[in-house]
Length: 264
Image 1 (cartoon, rainbow, N blue to C red):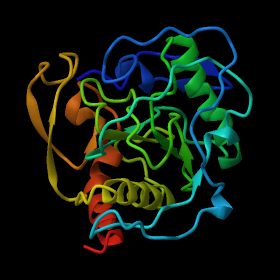
Image 2 (image 1 turned 120 degrees about the horizontal axis):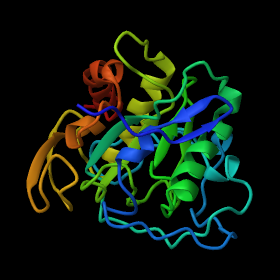
Image 3 (image 1 turned 135 degrees about the vertical axis):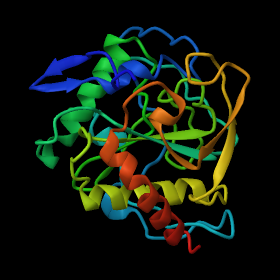
Image 4 (image 1 turned 90 degrees about the vertical axis):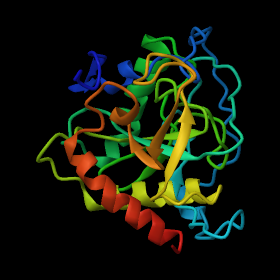
């Protein structure tokens, strides 16, 4: 099985690799090339962590509280690569979990810089139209908005070849091979984020969902419908090691915790 990706950007000792596997653009289609500098953030209003209310949405009978999410303006304060408007699915029915395959010894205060490296690799070096992941979570459990378009919307990302439509990509910052401890704060935040996003469509995090591949670069030919866990791993849909064996082993507990946060 191929590793998570081919080498990406080396900066300040951070080898960012995982992005190479997911393919450019939305839904596995060709990426729109990076254009002139002058990106204006179009993510819509996102509350800073201290102002995010611990509320329960009313979209369905099983929902979870909106977790605290750091808006992308906190890690991408200046204009960067111009991008086209975000694209949206009708709703989110599944989550794909990733890791960034970068060193684990970072200080959480440096997380915004790490995310900028991922963004520069994907939107700059690879000419994608934005960072591919919808959200990123660091080892301290801080959740960051990734791809622009609105945290409460079904933004189509670029994280799962053939299965970007109607899914959310959550990237754990670090490398999580066999024997690597998954920080409890990180696992809890992944569960909370997945519970909230899936709850907006009343999806049980422990359930199985059916998704149709949009291209043949995934494990499934274009047009084939496949069944996944509602909280699945990147490797489930693509030939990759991502998100690492340690996160794979943590997934059953993450699903159970997410279901509990929905009141199931």
